[in-house]
Image (spheres, rainbow, N blue to C red):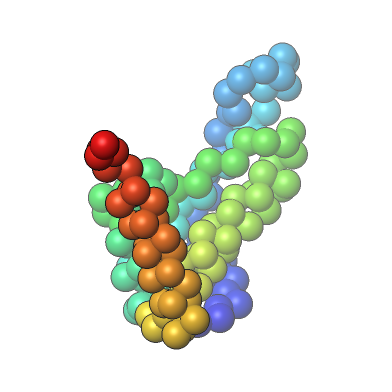
Amino acid sequence: MNLHWTPADWELDFSFIRASGPGGQNVNKVSSAVHLRFDIARSTLPPIIKERLLALSDQRITNEGVIVIKAQETRSQEQNRADAVARLVEMVQGVAHTPKTRRATKPTYGSKMRRLEGKAQRSGIKAGRGRVSE
């Protein structure tokens, strides 16, 4: 399933907080970090994608089915906001990708013969290791 999805504005809930970590005066006075909250159940995603998201064992998904992403990499609130949305889209697209089902294949005749020849050779080596009779 190939999904090119962008969330609608009403689906995203942003709250701006002060970032943690180093940064001096800027960190102490500017609320540049972003908490993005995305409710999976209320979203416009297809039902199969919602199920897969809820089945993920990801610490960013709460018990209520809300994805919480914290972005605080840059000093700009807008860049952090864009980063949070990009990470949400990446998370959804990762779930949307379904791996190809694996079909078991039979070994070829040649590979069977090579295996049996190798076993016979090894058997001969081991058979020759017995006690030497005088």
